[in-house]
Length: 241
Image (cartoon, rainbow, N blue to C red; front, top):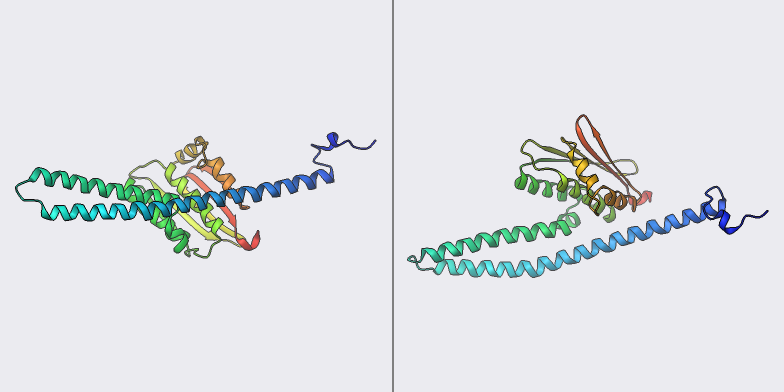
């Protein structure tokens, strides 16, 4: 008796079904990677708009406020105090603007490579939270395939954003080139990092990051041991895909 279409629809042992499943999986992988790249392009465009529009406006405001500060009469301390407060708030706004731009699309990632972008972000994290963050990498990876560098940077960014601020906390990031691709390892002294990422069911949680890495043929895993938490991401280079 010949197999009916319905009887073979979910039969993975049938050669035709295997071929169809592989074709669908390949199509979904290509679509997923395309959507990720489109999303990153939109973030990059938004980052450019924020930089061009807000950057020029905030610079003009800063120049005007400093112009006023030089011309305030010395007998009006209350005006000078308010002006200094406005300048401080302006400085904080500039910092928030730059942080938002870097989260959307760090300029160093495109111009100087993955390692420089990671070191810059870690330095800012240490200044802001007191967390010790070290990056160990033998090169800048400035010629790394764009989709690979974006995926690895997003993994590191998410891991660091889930790390709990602690004065004695240490996060170590290692980026290394292997035979078929690039490996990113993030070691955290405390296992709370894994719990936080697993609890986050959004795009920057473990599931969303795993799918991002899978879309370019890589893999992502998180391990908890006696030394804390380990996040291990591997992406193949362009030649191996």
